[in-house]
Image (cartoon, rainbow, N blue to C red; front, side, top):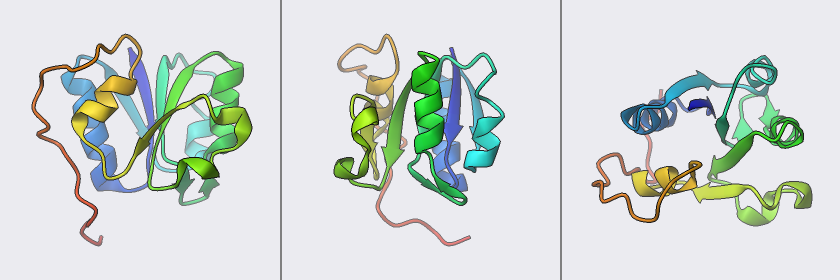
Length: 128
């Protein structure tokens, strides 16, 4: 499966990429809404979207994927209540997250992968 990751924190982006690629998926990473727009017409099967990235909120990208019937989930430090009603059916993973939470939101995921939470995040992130 081809997965787009929209995340502007390079550490989190690398973690997400490692999680999905360890499961055999192909990950493409972008850090801005402008970059993500370029992927809208590509052959993406699923997307993991941070809400707040360097050039705004990812809601327009999410709506475009929704219109194209491409699955997606928000992986964000934002509150679920900040998600527009039109996107409220999307998957939602709060940061900091565990690997299992990411795997569970992917299409075809089964409950409980039995895999260790090796890539769990903490709330603190090193500054760049």
